[in-house]
Structure formats: structure tokens, C-alpha cells
Length: 348
Image (cartoon, rainbow, N blue to C red; front, side, top):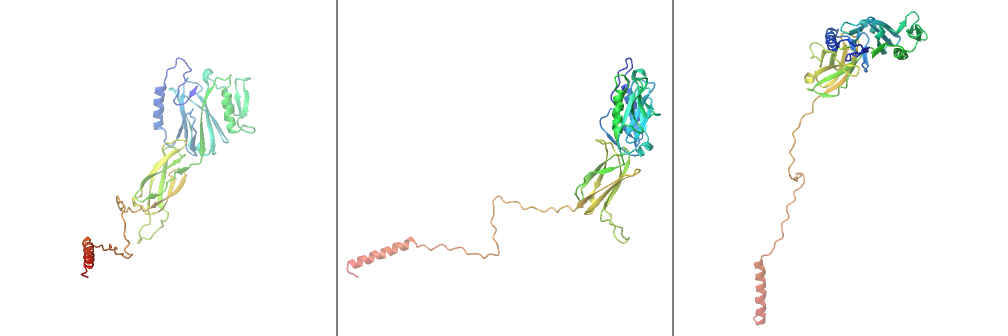
């Protein structure tokens, strides 16, 4: 029985659980494995994108020490490859699709089926290269199930499903595990950058289907850059550098490049990302502008004040009306009183 990297087959009694030692050896193998190879783990449900020309390594654990080893079926668009791989004494195995093989693979989905012979030590489902048929050896001493290649063969997704159904048959004790992957032309994507001010520091990021360890050249230059004479000042504004592809998620790996715009001029900038050893290119653009000047602010008074428009004529204040003194009123009354007395007495 074959399981993924993190599962150990326990169907055979009396066998030692060598998982800790096998895992240690697998980790050591991963360290010395070429950094450009894409490593796939059987049993994984996620689909990895592979770039044409990147080698693919499929590794895991298969206990039981099958003398016949394992049978590996690689089925994809106009492509079928069936190979045998031996299981190491520590129950590990590793199978590789070379760079020269993946270079010419058509774009599309591929399925790897790893078959274990189980108890009888023989593969009960095999491929007959002479007739291009898949054979069930337990039926009628070898009965053809379906046409895998050549005229009348099943389409690749159907062929992979039919093969899995054949291995699952009740009269077959073989077991299998699978791992899917996509093949595409080498590509690199640049995430949206946005606009920035002179002096900003930020990171440009992107994704790629290139294997971990590939190098990418990132170039940033002003869109108005043009060659100048020696007596003129250089029109170059930007930066460049090499970054390395690191593991990502969702089937793609990632890369990143740090940018410091302290020496940039206000302009539109072009970003070009290209493979150092692989033919891949991507481009994007962003703008850098002057940072707005910071102006002082006038504190708002606690209570509103009225401002006077100096262009308006000043209206003099209205003088209050004159009022008579109370003494003047008394004098008038006394005068009238004296006048009346004089008339009465006949003096007037």
C-alpha cells in the first residue's frame, strides 16, 4: 500500500515502524535535491503548476518491501509514460521526470498514479505495449479493459479514471495513490503595485510557476528614460536586482523585490521581470509623485470672532440723545410758580 509522505502503511504485521527514520532521510534528500526541481507528494489534493523544462520529483513512503517495486503511470494530454521504481530499504521511493521530458509536455493537466503490488507481489493491472491496452491479469488469465493509447483510446481524463477504477476492482489487491499537476509555459506574474511618493519604501511581489530556486531579474526604470550625451546629465532613475523564487501557495511559487524611491524622480516607472536562465518575462507600471507640502494650520478659537472688511466705510457711532438735567426742570417749575404769584398779587 502506498501512502503520502506523512502516512505509513501498517497492513503488514511484524514490520517495524520506520517512519521517523524514513522522514529524516527524506528531509536529508530534500536538502541535497537540486533546487530547481519541483517536488510532489503523492496523496496531496492540491494541484501544482509546473513550468516546461522544470524537472519534477515525486517522492513518498511505501512499506512492505515489494520485490517488484512500484509502477508509475504518468497520464496527460497526448502523453503516457509507464515506469518502474524501486523502494529503498527505509521504505522511501523517488521518481523523477527529467527536465528534457517536461520541456516538450503540452500545456494541461497531468495525473501520476503510483501502483503498489500488495500481498501477491505482482501487478495485477498492467499495460500491454504491443496492443496499447490496459490488462487485468486476474480476469480470464489477462483480459483487456480499455485502450490506453493509439486509435480508439480514451481521452486522458477518462483514461486516468478508468485506470483507478480497474485497480479498485474487487478481484485486485493492488493499491495506488495519486498526485496531479498542471504544465504551462514558464510564466511570472506581478501583483498590483499602485502609486507612491518619492521617498517611499515598498515591496513589489509576484507569482510564478518556475521551480523554487530559479533566479529572476527585476528591472525598474523611468518611462521617460532615453540615452543622453556625455555632457548631459543622466536621465536614468530606477533600480534593478536579482531575486530568487521561494515556495508559495495555491500551486504557484512567489518572489519579492524591495524598492526604495529616495533617489527616484517624479515619473511613471516600468517594471520588467525576466528569467535569468529561463525564458519568462512580465511587465507592469506604477507612478511616483512629489509628496504634497505640509502647510501649517491656524488653531480654531474657542468662540467665533467677527472680522471687519477694511474696504467698507467706517460708520461713526450714533451719538446718544441729549437729556436735560433734573435741576433745569426744577428751575423752570419755580419760575412759573413765581410768575403766577406775581399776577395774582397784581404786581404784574
